[in-house]
Amino acid sequence: MHIRQNQKNLTSAQKKRFTTAVLELKRNGTYDTFVRTHDKYFVPDRDRKLRVGHMSPSFFPWHRLYLLEFERKLQEIDAGVSIPYWDWTSDTSPVSSLWAEDFLGGTGRASDRKVMTGPFAYDEGNWTVTVGITESAFLTRNLGRPQNPIKLPTAAELQWAIDDPVYDSAPWDSTAGGGGFRNKLEGWAAPKSERWRNHNKVHQWIGGHMTGGTAPNDPAFWLHHAFVDLIWDRWQQQHPAAGYLPATPLARGDLQQGRVISLDEPMPPWNIPPREILGHQNLYRYE
Ligand code: CU1
Ligand code: CU1
Image (cartoon, rainbow, N blue to C red; front, side):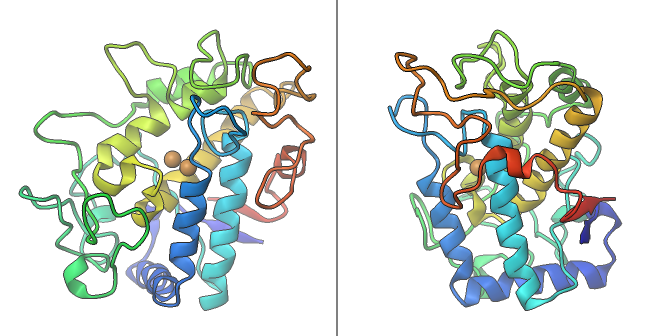
């Protein structure tokens, strides 16, 4: 049992231990295997195959297991480290302590978005992007997208998702607009005028590597998804009688049959069903 803290409350010693452990996983190759795994399971709607990590009901339990496995690797390096969370509804500045030199480093420079400060700046020599390099081997960011500004999700926008009493709804994908906490929080359920919501909008606000399948190339990914994981708790607390859906495998003939995970179907690559990871209270807690 360990505690995941709000990143804004970390001491400088805790920040140092976290970034040091992350750098060690990068150095020994473990980190990039995680990036590769995420990319492999980044399957969009249009692919007619199993979607376990994104655009599907198992978005929450899949990322819970993914973070947990990463956190265990961090703890093999330093048993006192856990993944902090970033509450992006309250900590909204691109120059907050989260983006300071002693933690994640700041935004990218204007010319090529290259991150120039902090432990993950390419020029420090410890952070070369090797998986899914579409543009560069250096980490890129564009916090807040100043040329075409985007705002982080507000507390009201987050609450709009949490207030939905239904976990998810057919067709269980990015178009599930009839309702459902999962799609509202993952962030596809948005009017055209405002393309991104909640979780997706945060990826867009950070920009650079955070916008694609290899998003974990940016260590900000872990802090963002720890908060997403905590939000699932909030939804469960607000709707104690509601549960994960679909509760049973989809019927033959359903277009989504074989493409989404129901409550007791195993999630690759761990072979664990959502039912086994609906709660985390015996593993870690948030503070
Ligand atoms: Cu993801
Ligand atoms: Cu994400």
